[in-house]
Length: 113
Image (cartoon, rainbow, N blue to C red):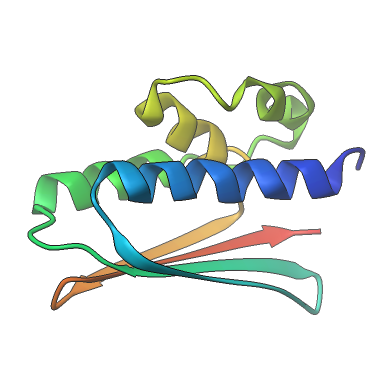
């Protein structure tokens, strides 16, 4: 797969932009490969994140991966429409878990490599 590092960086950038937009503080990022999976984990503090925002984020990031479209879609990230950006990220990852408890937001992304 061409441009693997650039795609991974785009995924990180788009999630980071989203987290900053919703008011996250103390953002932590873990990036590691385990077996054939790239794992990208974010954790941060954000106060009063409503259930609708969490549900919307889960929906957008859970769009099934589109290997056939990935070559084209990864180049589209970077615009101002964050909802569209999250759905593009969703098309480039295989699995997403999102947790929000006591003002702690955690997003776990897995991408088969």
